[in-house]
Amino acid sequence: MNDEPAQQDQETSRPPLQLLPCRYSWRDLDQRQAARLWADLIDWTAWLRRRYQLGSRVPACWYRHESVVEELTALMAAHTAAYWCAPDGVELPREDMTAWHTQWLWPTIERLTRISDFSACRPHHCRYESHAQPVHAGVDDYLAEQLARTPHGGEPAAGR
Image (cartoon, rainbow, N blue to C red; front, side):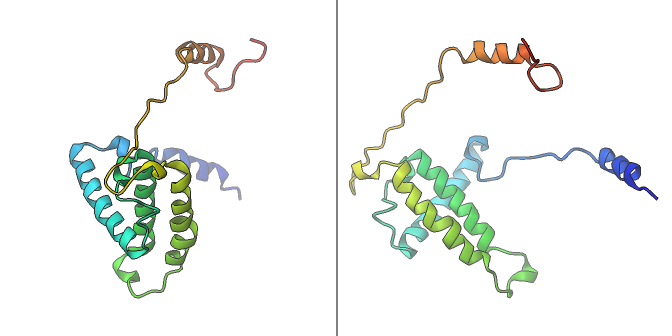
């Protein structure tokens, strides 16, 4: 007996999955949510810097460096996923804590030196400047052309 049609009917009758931005998505936060995340991130980063003695690798002005804020937010989220668990798992050993160190913490700390210019910062003076990243003026025309060439099926039409 073939159950494929029945399975397909069940799959198509499910409501579409709704995706929502998580609480760590800076660009999607309102003022109240951003204030909460800032408080959590500042507290967590102070703990991280102290616990791992990262003062020179994550200087005191880290919060002024936008890409560093994003990286540390992601690192904090990964730390939460590794170290927090459901009540029934509190006593269980967890290998994801080791993975957090090897896959997330140390690679992120190394990456921070490449994506930020901490070398220009001093203990009481941050030299970070945010610069606009312009898009070429022709992006709107290019997009209109691409959309005009794309049939409703998705792939650009051949020979156009």
